[in-house]
Structure formats: C-alpha cells, structure tokens
Length: 164
Ligand SMILES: [Mg+2]
Image 1 (tube, rainbow, N blue to C red):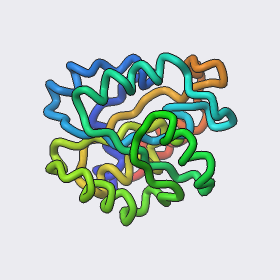
Image 2: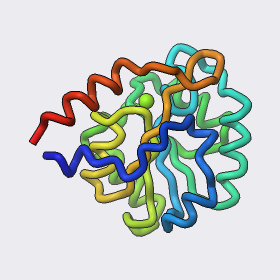
Image 3: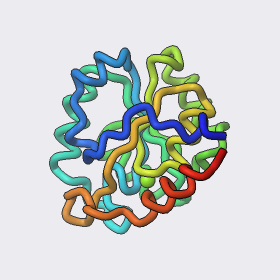
C-alpha cells in the first residue's frame, strides 16, 4: 500500500517554480498535468500568467498532456484550448484507464513520464499505479499564488503515514 502513496518529488513549490532542467535531469520527456489546483484555482478559469509562461517553456522540452478529474468537458476543454494541449476530463484518477490511454498516446516509456498534481489520493496514486514518476506541487489560490496551508494534503499525508 505504502508504495502507491510514494511521491518521487514532493516539491513544495507551485508548478511554475518547477525547474525544467531538474525534470530533464530526472530523465523526464513527458508530463501529465493535473488541472484544478495545479494549473488553475478550482473556482477560477483564469490561468495565471506564471503558469502560462511555464507551460510555454515546458512545451519546448517535453510532451504535455492535461489529465483532469473534473467532469466538466466545457471547463477542461477551454483551459486545454487556451494552452493548446491535449486533454482528458473526468479521468477518475486514481483509476488507471484514462491515464493509461494518455500514456499510450504520448508514446514515451513510462520511466520517462511524470505526473504533476496537487493531491496524493488521486494524482500520486494513479501515477504509481501506472508506473510513472510522481511530482507533488502546491495548490494554487485564486490569485495564482500557492496556498500556505493545504488542509486536504495535510490530511492525506497524515493518513498515508499510518497506512501500511
Ligand atoms: Mg488537483
């Protein structure tokens, strides 16, 4: 059980502070990106400028793919269109099916793919179940800055600590 909760890189950073060269050093060629909380605040559809810039730079180096549990095709398609990225919505992470089909579409070896997300019980678990690398980032507030205290993540880490 513990192994599916394993975070390869608990960055403690918002996604836009993740260093692309650090990702390259880890052998990563492709990134699956969570949307709500990771790229945008879940109650906002405005993509922070820092995120847009990070995506633009990352596209030069990696294949990117959005993978969201949000059931609203309208919301996720709009964000994907603005970033010009492929996407899956209603992905049911930590279930594997849609994440595996995104991995297949990307075509990289699993060891060269990482998922970046703000939650352990969805993003990290699905990444481990698909044998790809897992990166945890800080959740974004409405103003695009990372939240200081993430109650969900604190609870998830607390539970993870006691799961054997
Ligand atoms: Mg999220």
